[in-house]
Length: 311
Image (cartoon, rainbow, N blue to C red; front, side):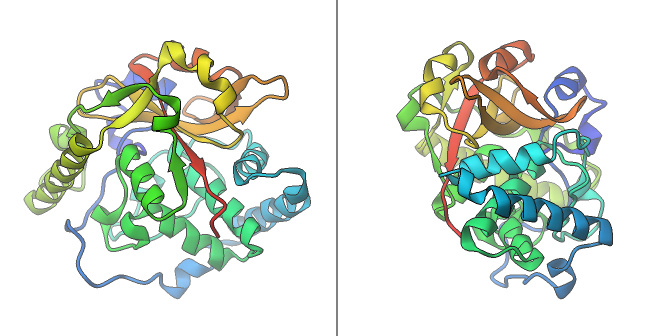
């Protein structure tokens, strides 16, 4: 899932510089309590005037383009290209001590880029162009069961992000359709790199929260393995990939499932690229998806999910 700012200087620095995302870090108990924390009124309005202007501009553009695409994924590609050139911003969700809905439209990491374009596209499909609607959809996608209940309710590992959003009807994972191999490796990157995470490096309660989360995810993965397309077979499934499909780059790094993510960029000639937040170049289109995966260390294939037109 998204990157923790403290991971960049560590042993996987080269991978992060090329790919750009790993698990995030912060604080809260796991599993979540029975009491759902509703979004405060402050989260339903833009955090500043610049964000308000960016949001209004992109949504207005999306409204003008709405009739030119038949799919929500195509709309996500259209909205995503509107952000081309925006910088990569690392660790934006971990700048506050208490988990709250953080929104940045002046730059993104690889997952906040997906979340933002998806929430905007869903709003356009629903005919809701309000910022409050966008904020609610964003929180729904970012947190387990669609409810913000503290740090450990955030979907830190990307395969869980996909599974949780599928369970609520927001995406369809394409593992069975695309075939491929089962991913059954352990998910323990956060706990085995405890010192890299300021929030639980010295906090045993939070560390226990992370361990329990990882154990639950690993158990689920053993029962229902994620299927991924190996890197040398990606081009063979180009015809099955559509504009705006959500892609996670499966990694060989121990304890981690996905090291980067983005959107399928559908070229008019049938080629498939990657629209994503690059650590070095910001929001950019890498022209060939398979070539991109093959040239980044530790990336071994892709998992894919298709956005559903659910408001």
